[in-house]
Length: 147
Image (cartoon, rainbow, N blue to C red):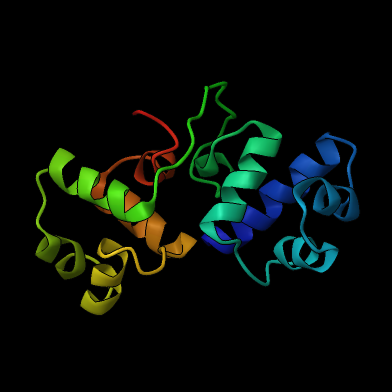
C-alpha cells in the first residue's frame, strides 16, 4: 500500500474509533471539511503542519498516521523546530553531506537547498524519503521526537 492510502485508512479508523466525523474533526483542527474529505478519499496527503496537527489531536505518531508503525505509541511529543534548523541537525547527527541527501534519494538538489535555506518545507512524501534514508522515524526527521 502507498503512504497516501495508508494515511487515508488510518485517519478513517481513528475518526470511527473516536466517534467523530470529517466535519467534527475539521472544526476541531481549524480546517475545511472538504480538506478532511480529500484526505479520507485518498486524494491527497496533508502538509507536514497539518499532519502534525492531526497526530497531536489523536495523540499518535505521524509514523502511525502514515502506516509506518502498527501501534499507537504513548509518547510525549515536542514542538517541531523550523525545518531548515532540523535539517542541519540531521546532517550533523547522521554525519551526512548535503550531496548524500539528493544523490541517494530522488529529491532534487534545488529543492533540497531550498529547504536548507529555509525556503519552504518538504512534502510528506519527501519527509518519508528522508526517514528511510536516515533509517529513523518521520517524527524524528521533523523534530517531533527525540529518538
